Length: 215
Image (cartoon, rainbow, N blue to C red; front, side, top):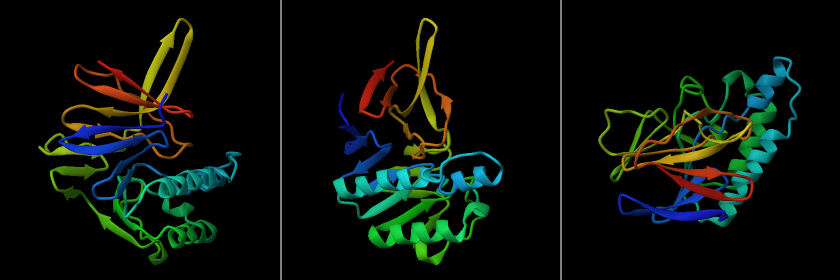
C-alpha cells in the first residue's frame, strides 16, 4: 500500500497523497478541500465533548505536507473554516502562527461555510469565487456547466466496502476524465458515499496509504 502515487490528468502529473491532499509538482501547488478549521470549537460550544486537539492534529498533518513537498501555493477548494462564530482569538492566533511558520501563498475558493466570512489579515488569504489556472478549473461545488477539467470539494466523497455484515466507508478521491473530487481534509468531517460509474476510479485513503479501485 503506497502513501502516494502520481497520476497524469490532462497531461499534467499530480501526486495523490494519503494525507488527503494533491500536489502539482510543476507549479508547486498543494491542493486540499474542506479543512473546516474551528469545527471542534463550534461543536463544543453546542455541548459536544470533543477534544480540542483535533485542529492541532489537522495542522500537524498539513505541516508534514509542507515539509515533504516544495509548496509555493496552498490552494483550498472551499470550507477553510466551519463557522465564523468559531473563530475565537485562540483559533485566529493558532492559524496566524501556522501561516508565519509556513508562509506560502494561500488561495481560497470560498465555499458555503466561509462564503461570507471576513478573514483575519494575519492569515494572508487571497479569496476567489472560482479559479481558472491553465486548462483546469478549481471550485468548491462541482459545476456541470464547466468544460475544463475540474477539481472540487464539498461532497466529502466516501468509498463503501461491504463484506457480509461488515460495512466500511473511507474517504476517497473520485477521478474520471472530466473531474477529480477531493476528500475532506478535516478528520472530523464525514461525507457521502459516491458510487463509481464506468470509467471512474476511487483513490481510497486510509491511515496507512492509498488503494485504487476502478469501475
